[in-house]
Amino acid sequence: MKPNQNGFSLIELLIVLTILGILAAIAIPNLMGARRNANEATAVSSLRTIASAETTYRSTLGKGNFGNMNDLVDGGLLDPAFSFGRRTGYTYILTKVDESAAQVPIFDVSAVPIKHGASVGGTGTRSFYTNESGAIYFNFLATAPFPTGNQDRTVNDGAPINN
Image 1 (tube, one colour):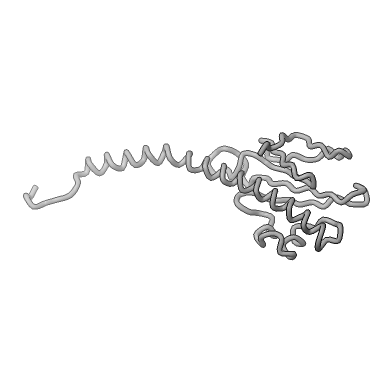
Image 2 (cartoon, rainbow, N blue to C red):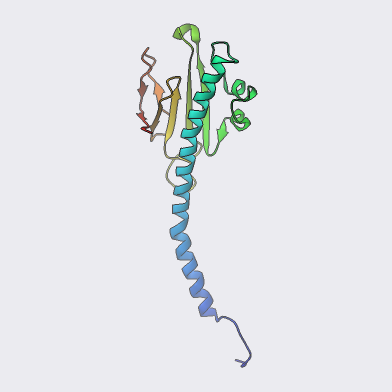
């Protein structure tokens, strides 16, 4: 080597790259888990927003009836991103139940992860559901909880979120 030559040797560079590879192998799954948790928290918040928007729509623009997702977006009650049915890793499905059969206006809204699972690339591990009651239910399946169809509107396959 020449006396004025500066820099890193090949061994030093390989050691640094190995350390960076180990750190990446540890950090990436944790970052993906944090992203899934953030997606789930956003889904719960979005369901609350949709339920609130439905209540507002019913008492103002809907003349006693609930609206569909486009009605809520057009009325300025929801972010336009909801009109596509997807937002932050979840698909949102809003269903107005036939009011004549139900005797009172009711709606169902579900949030299902676009890619279900805890593996890398999964956008969520839980599915969520709410209705006109405002209670939010979840389960760990790829399908969202759903109402039983009874008059009491109890929910199958779901546990309530207690927050």
